[in-house]
Image 1 (cartoon, helix red, strand yellow):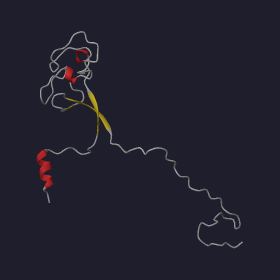
Image 2 (cartoon, one colour):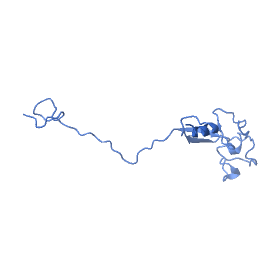
Image 3 (cartoon, helix red, strand yellow):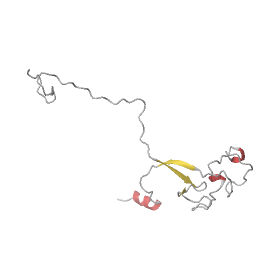
Image 4 (spheres, helix red, strand yellow):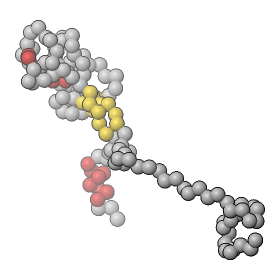
Length: 136
């Protein structure tokens, strides 16, 4: 049997008269919205007073290395809530009057937040960033 079309791929089964079975390419089914490509996450502890990123493994019985804020205080605690009883979500027996002063609460846990990693490079200092604006 003579082939009607001579293009490569048409009836390439190897035998002359038989027609090759062609399976159509299967499309990937997409149900719902696409998953966005989000940056990575990391858990960090920041100072409640100056928002400085505290290094991992810091001693929370000490002070903030930048501003000197007491780290073992109510404002730095994960359970601190101004709308709760004695401004704490845990069942404390007595109110602690100064929330920024050091205390000996047994429920203390440093407040950690989950932040997105938006930058892959180290941030430049202000002077270097300003000079980069006018560089030729």
